[in-house]
Length: 216
View 1 (cartoon, rainbow, N blue to C red):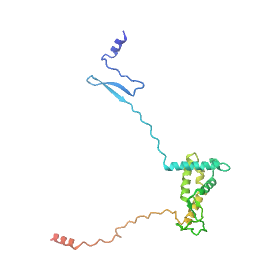
View 2 (cartoon, helix red, strand yellow):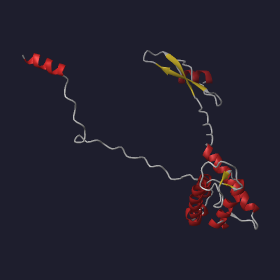
View 3 (cartoon, rainbow, N blue to C red):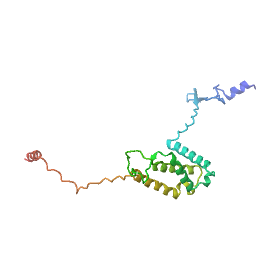
View 4 (cartoon, one colour):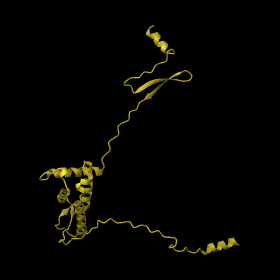
């Protein structure tokens, strides 16, 4: 028996067989309806594109820059400090080091403009980092420390000495600049009860006249 007769016996109706290529994106198949008619069908495989990388937020970019600045400060320290050796005292040194790059005028107690929010003339008082900038900086560095494998209980940016220092800077700058850093609390809305509502005005005379005419 030859190969041609063997293939005819295995496929007596001579239907086309499906051909699947190893590199083909579309595979052809044959379906037989109830009437005995062969209908070729095709299925297309669609590969999904990989998700696009998300753009870091402004907060994440600033946090990365602050962390790089602090690590550079540790490397330039004399003697150089490793992150594991860093303590709250080194964080305070870093904050005082940043004061030389500050842009906020903080009046001394001997300055005649001490406590004035808008001084009328310039004065030789030094420029410092504003309390709000330092407070936000410590928050970002505290988060970055734990993201880089630091333990929360040993976070030097959350040390008690750092919190006290920030509180002292806030209080002194508030007095020196004549500004308040206290958050304004929203007053709760007072609900007027029915007993406190003013009495309604009597109906006008025209309405009373129409009511009398309707009753007659």
